[in-house]
Image (cartoon, rainbow, N blue to C red; front, top):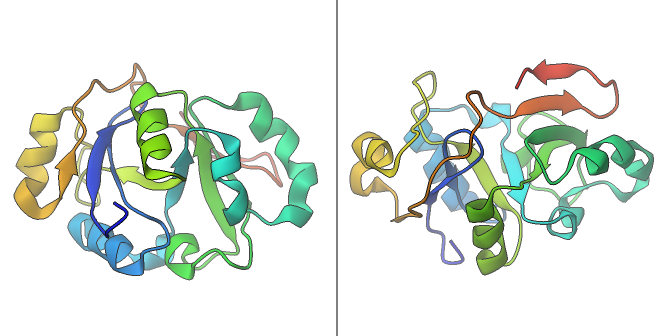
Length: 173
């Protein structure tokens, strides 16, 4: 991933596709693999909160209490993005979707990479997410660079997404 690669890895509910969020070419590869619009934005996942700090607007610290109370865990939060966060991550928004995972494979991958990584379900846009490494290979073949073998966590549905400013649930978990 440090060299622009795309990896698939198990998360709380399905396999995710990930890459270096600072590498526009790698992000574009993921969007093309998924047939997903860059305007939607992407989730960043981390093994610990410090890995997300560079992507968050420091002036919005008051919005962190609730997210920090749910992490690590299967909760994705929408928070104000730092002005340095690339638009290829935020899409058409001034906010960013972030999660500190409790999933061991995600934690280990973020640690090995050295920071937060892109996390989007391993599937074509609109298709069912891959829940096994075999499904990932069926969907993408050799168009991805690596697959982290492991087991998906126990969630039946993708992680809940909440807006930290309004408290609204944007996607039920």
